[in-house]
Amino acid sequence: MNKWILITLGSIMVIGLIISLQSMDTETKINQYIKDKYNKEITLVKEEAGHAGNGGDVTHMVAFKDQPKFVFGVHVDGGLFTNEFKVVGDELELGKAAFHQYKKLESYLPEFGKVGFTKSDKRNLVSYSVIKDQTEFTLNMKSKKKIEDFKSEEEWIDQYYQLLELAQKTPLDLERISIDVPTNHEEGYLSFYELNPKNKEEFAQHFKESESDYFDYFLDLSYQELFQSLEKPYFHFAGNPHGPFSDTLGVQCDAYDRNNRCDDLTFYMEYRPVKEEMELKSFDDYNELMSNPDDQEPDLAPLIDEIQVVLKELRENTKGKVSLRVDAWKLGSFSFDENVPASEKGIKKAIEEDE
Image (cartoon, rainbow, N blue to C red; front, side, top):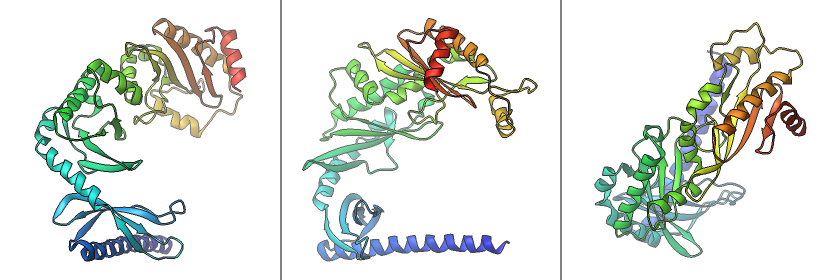
């Protein structure tokens, strides 16, 4: 093995060992503080990183060894610039309050399971925070189903509304429900702050206002047939930069009407002009093209022709305002709002204004 590779691997192992020892040292020092003050032992649950912004003054989350669900914060003066470490206080009383909420909730977990949710595997079932000297409790759940497993937006709303109804029946004093949302891409995360809507319609309205990124997924589904009819080997609908779907969606809702229907949309299109002699069987074939680009000056005419067709079809098949954003490789990125005419002259003018 190359000696430089060995040196690099050795360096990585040393850094990892240092970080591990630092964590062990942190846990040991906090443990001593808790043992002296409360005659209890703890395990380190989450270690906050010290940096220039906080000067090393951090709050580490710990749990009692004999009560792993009893989680609370310990304040540390990390001495970022002095290499000193000093425990300066703890949040045991807040931890007690959260643990009390947890004990009241624990028996409801099977009921939560029946409506499709389980406790989060990233956060404690009931966590606390202090906002303006007011203690607020959060219920941390996780959906059992990926968002792609739901057949419709209505089915998704129904299940989350069942979760809220069940939470309302518990004796919990909650300010928020936070939910981990599995997807086929990266895992998402959402929160409910309005916990007492009048009905499911009002809940859906709050849901869409606060978490519209997720509803873009269902909106995208509703346009798949239209997208497929318009797509060609050199362009497809994708590029929505919002939500947990890794820019794979072709549409985004910018505003909902009073009936929770989207009436202001932006469509996203990726355009990749190709050499005439190249036969591309899939969009992935552009990897070869992009590594061997055509050095000729890019031609705007084919792009303008396509945008004319796309804008016309989108507007005829969509209720509400329609905007289009196009990422055209080698040509640039362009925006066409609802005021741009779907004509050669109108599109060319919009492109010139974007350049």
